[in-house]
Amino acid sequence: MAAMTHRLLLATAVAAIIASFAATARAHFVLVAPAASLVQNRLGDPQKIAPCGGVSGNPARGTPPNPGVPSGAVTNVKGGTNLPMMVQETIYHPGHYRVALARTMQQLPPDPVVTTAQTEKGTRSQSAVIQNPPVAPVLLDGIFAHTERPTQNFEAEIPIPNIECKDCVLQVIEFMADHPGIAVDGGHSYHHCAILNITADPSKPIDKRW
Image (cartoon, rainbow, N blue to C red; front, top):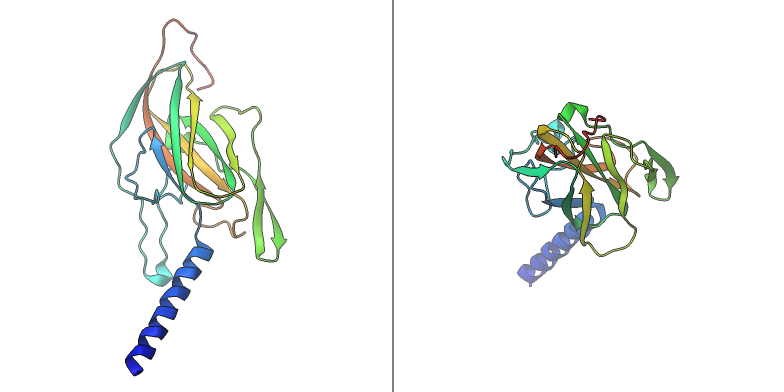
């Protein structure tokens, strides 16, 4: 009888832990295409830190930082064409996505400015600035806007500028609405990047914004 009671208490505790995790889980996504610059697990981690992923760690809990493992993947693309993109959202969260391109990681734009508000759950993100139309180095903004489950795949065509750029950095971020208001460890966005080798099309004018 004691053993049965112990098993019941253990099962209850495990169920509570699982429920707590589900209640606090954040959005995650996998960058399926183009190939991501970091090795991703099934949820897309590590992806929290700007500009391209990783996690800062938690010294108080003895968790070391994890900048991620480079995948070595490089995607070749012709300038002035559209590049297919696919993301798989692995943990649902309302929000939208933004795509930017820069010659180096340091030249990628900061995460969008976020508006927060007090709710019954505390301070939560409400909205983020969306560039309409997008301004270089942003290529697409406000795409894949969604407010309902389930998780899903999203696909788009990215307009690649006609430039010559070896090891250009394509950044894909997801802004999360209804996210806790303390903007730490990547703030209200998740981040992935892809490395592109862009070859300019000589028959088209060079895009001088880059």
